Length: 453
Image 1 (tube, helix red, strand yellow):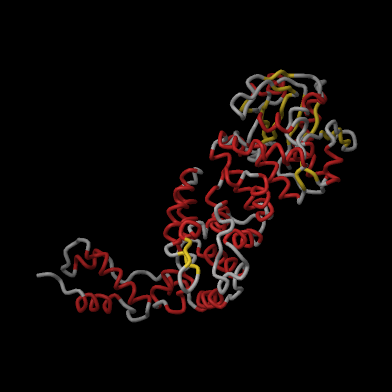
Image 2 (tube, rainbow, N blue to C red):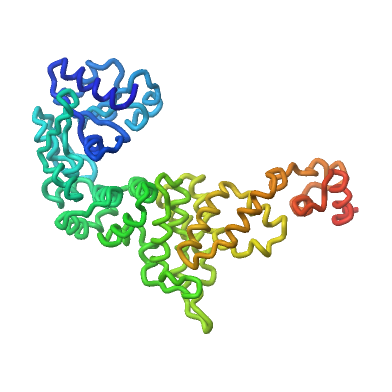
């Protein structure tokens, strides 16, 4: 069963039991925009206990706030991850009004209500505050002016923006993300509230901040998102390392486009929708080491050691943002290796093959291409590596090793640190085509690394 069909069936079932029920929130917005919603939410006057009695399989993941998850048909994905309705569940929320938000995320108390109008008043933005009746010709019920703001391409809070943002500080980042995603403007009073409250974004967990930033980077409008982060004052609060790129000049012979910030924005502009998060973060942070290493030398502006500094900064930031080890390793690798393309035509064959077989090398290629197109525009090194990869069979880039540590022991070598040096030298010779067989490799070892007597 499709998500929309499941949500409509939930509405129909609730109505059949005498309750009010509507589609609500982002799915209504997306349907009005002619987009396929990523997920569907239902709002009802049925209490959580009533919802759980009506539907045979449910998860009360937020019942204290009136939120119950109902699986889509027989989909068992919700069983394994009921924390997210993006995984096979529809979120069914009871109409409510909220008390104070002393933790800046959740209301201290909620009061369930029978009034849909009262429920939408506590939601974040007008474009997300509409109801839709799928059983009555998709009638839109709009108590907050959401349709007018959709037409005006405006992101505006429902009610007082200071209050809405004080309730959940993450809403400030969400305002930026929605404005970037849809190409909208943030309404003036709403933007003024963000600027005033921006320092308070620090109370939001770094994981939640990371997730919003990752969405901004991968939804296809990363440049606009980061321009709005800068204009709103949020950038210097959530990513001060990136904010410091502004005004850091670069040598015009290599970077005619302008400073480090302008260069980075041009890369973000080239990130496609649904870019991998690691490529997106790599694009954002590839030059993060330039501001602290900037110096004016007699010949030109220089950034000595900016790659090494950038890797350390990326690792620190990644830990703060709670990246997974795998994600952080890849983002750091992108930062660490983005300058190595300048050496590819001078690399030994073995070095180039080792370079090309790095994990997810396609992301290194994509970053280099964006980097070039966002500066001097010369793609000759990109084309060189691309041609080399197309001409070189995979088994030559990552061949089966000719000798192993066990072979060395059998040949009379004592295990120790020297093994790594020997095996690496053999592999280099193999990658360069100088060795084709195990016998040749062992002969090479005996000649170049005599066994210790």
